[in-house]
Length: 283
Image (cartoon, rainbow, N blue to C red; front, side, top):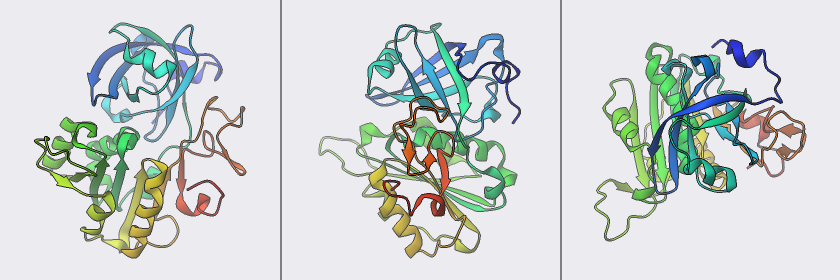
């Protein structure tokens, strides 16, 4: 995808103005925000990248893009209320103006995923950045042999993008399954309950031509990787994952996101497993 002509001419240090055009509640903790750049220029991002969002008077924060560039010039962010900036975002009204820097980071390597059987695995709010890739796969179905989506959340109320989950379940080009760790007794949820590793183990993976992509909380990674290997997914360039660790500046200057010699913001956030598995603190 081409870079936005506006952002490509701007300093990476200077925020560009964007307008909030849509807000949607996802869970009690998360909202989906859709933005439009001034002049309706495209952001020029790729699936897996992130932007630095700022609100006047507050700091800025890196947030993964939750929409594919194939969906038009507007872009979406799935935001969990965690700190001062994200809490302020949850209080915004339509028409609000924010600052944006980016897009930044290493995206999903689409060339390596083309003509593959894909297993896209998300845990918790990791579904937001993975959604950018899922939308791309849905919009470009002829580029991939098959696409299976697996999603795990803590409880029924923590399931994000429920309309999308149903849309993906109904799509002829995708397979989508999801599970929750625990179901409260008073819940009317009638879906699957159990760990995402159990959901993964129930699949038949076409391992000869398969690539897996994992995005989720750090404790999820090792069990999912171990399960994939037990199922025959071994070797280089077979497992891709996203690491987002204490990113602040977004451009490799502050050093907060380093894992040994790598910067998550510039060398990642998307890595092949063999690039980071041996690094202390990566997984």
